[in-house]
Structure formats: C-alpha cells, structure tokens
Figure: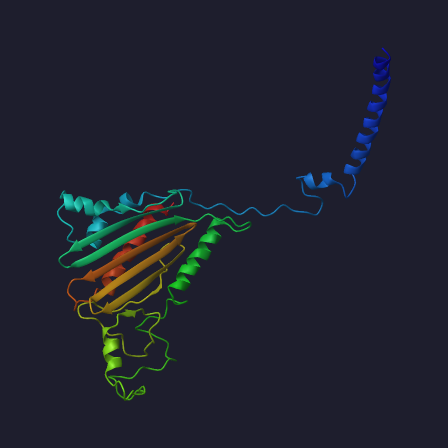
Length: 304
C-alpha cells in the first residue's frame, strides 16, 4: 500500500517537470536561431520563391509512320510498286523507331532498294522537357537546336550562297593554272595523287572555300549544289545540311532538315545512292523534297 501511495504523490511532480520542459522548448523554437524556422515553407519578408519555368506548348507527338502521306512517300521513294502491291504496302508502311517514351520521342524509317539504287527516309520527333529551374521547355529546345546547327556548321546568315559569295574572299585558281602549287615529294611523285583519288570525299558548301564570280561546278545531270544553309520558312528555326560523299563505290548524298517548333524538334534525313557509279544524286532534288516534307509536317501538326 505504501508503494501505491508513493506513485500517486510522484505523478503530479513528473507532470509539472514535463510542462516546464515543454515550455522551454517552445520558447527556443520561436527564436531567430531555432530549428522551427527552417521548416517554414513560406518565404520571409523580402524573399521570393524560385521562378517557375513555363511548360512547353506541345504535350504529345504524332504517330510518325502514319503521319507522312502516301502521296509524299511516293514522290520521295519512287518506283516502290503499284498501289495495293504487297511490296509497296510494306515499303510505305514504314518501320517505327524503337522508343521507350512515345510522349517524348517517336520516329519512322523507310528503306527502298531498286535496280536504280537505294533511297532512305527517316522522320524523328522529339518533345523537349526542361529539368532546369528557370529554363522553359522552349528555351531548352532552342539550346538543343543551336547545338545541332553548330555541329552541322550551318552559316550564321543564309544570305551567302555558293552563287553569291563574299567579294572579300580571293578567287581560287582557274583551270589549275596560276595558283600556288604544293611541294613535290621526289620519293613518291604519284603515290599521294593515287591515294587522294581513291579516298572518299565529302562535300559540304559550308566548309568549301567560296568563289567570287564563277558559280559552283554542276555534277552531270545533278543540277546546282545548293549547300547547307538556314531556312526561314519552316517552324521557329530551321536549317538544311547537305553532304555529298564520293569514292570508289560511287556517290551518295545525305540531306538533313532540322526545324524547331516551340518545344518540339523535328529531324528529316533523306539519303540516295545510285547504282550507277558515274551518277551523282541531285542536291536540288533531294533538298526540294525534304524541304516540302518539312513544311507539310509543320502545317499538319504545328499550325495550331
């Protein structure tokens, strides 16, 4: 019985001590250096919350294989067969690009093999999402576009073309006469020439020296070389990259059109390699068809 009486007397004392301790902790939490100030989600006087980046305009992407019209595919991949043929249906159906997030990246490929040569077409869509504080999706898309343009060595101004180059640059030697000649190697007078003849050569107007009066040479049956340049009639930003590679196996051309519309980047790659080794794919033909496809894509998906 004495033990029970002791507990009844001691309990109020313990409660009183706990109350005093709690009051002391409450007083500390209200101080300027207390821990409670760090848990307050509201900014103090004179402070502002981090800026919230603006979300992108587009929140989804089209189905790419069914997005390009059959008429456009027949223009870019001619000779694929008659309408309704199994081979034609398989060709124009395309092969979707393997992707793990169809809301962020989709694409489609078309590969054509004929007796006249090979043609390939690809269309890729990328919806850019920024994870940087204060950087919007559109700003991030612009950064990625600028990098692609720099990597392709696109001239800063599209007003300079191979047919109207800057007049301040010297003209190259005409016909191989009158120009500076490199040193000859007496030990190998023909080896260097044979090596250069057999090596593949890549031609890009953005990396070739400009001329002042003489227009660029035209490949047999291929028309003028248009070169790589910016485009001002597709999306918010656009450029075309034109690569002609020639070598012992013939010549093939790769034309790439990239354009940005808000927070979406679209890349079109159009490739042609003729079976005839003396034939050169036309810069005007490939660029023209890829350019038209880019405008069709923009008008169909990005016009709203």
